[in-house]
Image (cartoon, rainbow, N blue to C red):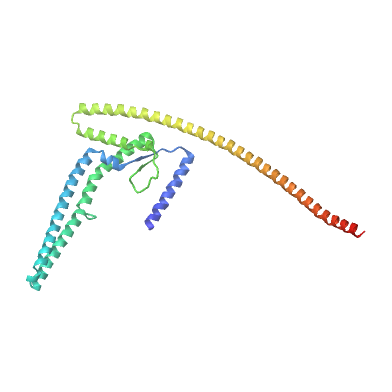
Length: 287
């Protein structure tokens, strides 16, 4: 729980820090997908295939041993009526030790510090080292401020594809692999020239991308400004309409109240006239 709290604090601190930097200048952020890179490194796939063969072999061995234990249990259950107490206990002890050996073998192969964990670490480590070197090179050349691993514990709720530099990392890893496979100086120099051309082309593409992004950013800002202006005009019209509507409703209410007031006054006058008419009639009858 304490570790999670520290991680949350560190994340919030980082977000605050990046917001401060972003307020001062435009930052460049990239990310890699380590799983994608591993899947596309031939050396890793070959070694991973060999490891998977070993894993299947270990599983078959364990399943065979478990099947033997099951057979031992069945035989003991079938023969219990014919065996003495001492023989039964001896057979049960054999089964117990057999199960213990299987459990120890499972831990040796698949435990937290077992062969599978160690060999996976040995398998991934060289690629991770190459990725680290490639990321350092790309970040330096293309002036990235931050590069993250999409598959790491820091959760990325959203990541635009244009910030993914995984293919660039793979390209550099493959270059290093090819360079190691070449023996003659001529081939190495040829490869270096090709890499130089590719680097220059990448720089041109990068510059074009940067200019395109800047233009896109400017266009988005302009569109946002226009939208804000339209929203402002629309809001002003809406307020004006609401004001005129409220005024009209108020006038209608006053008119209605005035009519109702006149009606009430007339009703009162009628009620006042009726009693006097009745009194006049009585007087005429008396005369």
